[in-house]
Length: 213
Ligand code: AP5
Image 1 (tube, helix red, strand yellow):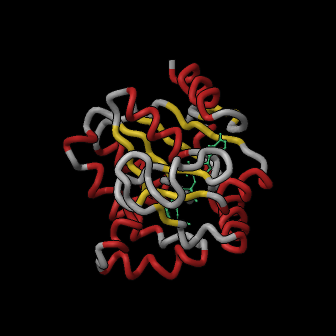
Image 2: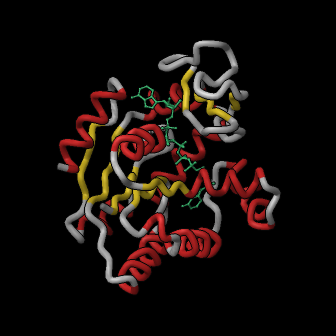
């Protein structure tokens, strides 16, 4: 299974992808997580990406495509993957089409998670993630049992530097301008499936599984 999660920041791509990979034998490839890992490890790529990410702008396509091409060569992704946060621009989608063609592979679905803007801002400004295992919490909708500490491994919870209201508003504008046009790109390939991304996390998961079945 090769699927793309398309949806605005905060629509639940990471939350739902982590639920699918836990229950099914498929890997998640999140370009946002990869970039944050580069930043944490102080790599040259991480340095290049930092200023774009902090402002809520997209990292240049050549950096992203080079990084994804390397990841897709990994044997653990041979059986399938969920792309979370990639592609995000038309050149990235065209680059992915080319990589798939060269590998004689095809996408199965492109899932578009729809959530109203006000809800996205509410979700993102209250998001916290585990600094070790990456588990995603929300201070309003899904708080940890103990303040600031991950329920799973006891590590510190972090507030992403791009989750301030001002940066979130810019990320939403960037999504509409640069990523929404991808719906047309994949609609022409008959791959688009819309998912109502509002309501309970489990109900949304069920909607996704219904589509995947
Ligand atoms: P990235 O990390 O990809 O961020 P994003 O797309 O903006 O998406 P998010 O991770 O913010 O949201 P999500 O949809 O995964 O929501 P989540 O499940 O966490 O990208 C960050 C930056 O990296 C970009 O701005 C860019 O600079 C760069 N970048 C990354 N990829 C790139 C690319 N391909 N090209 C160029 N640049 C790139 O949920 C959010 C919150 O809501 C959580 O607190 C969660 O608990 C809560 N929540 C989830 N579902 C529900 C629900 N049903 N009800 C209530 N709360 C919920």
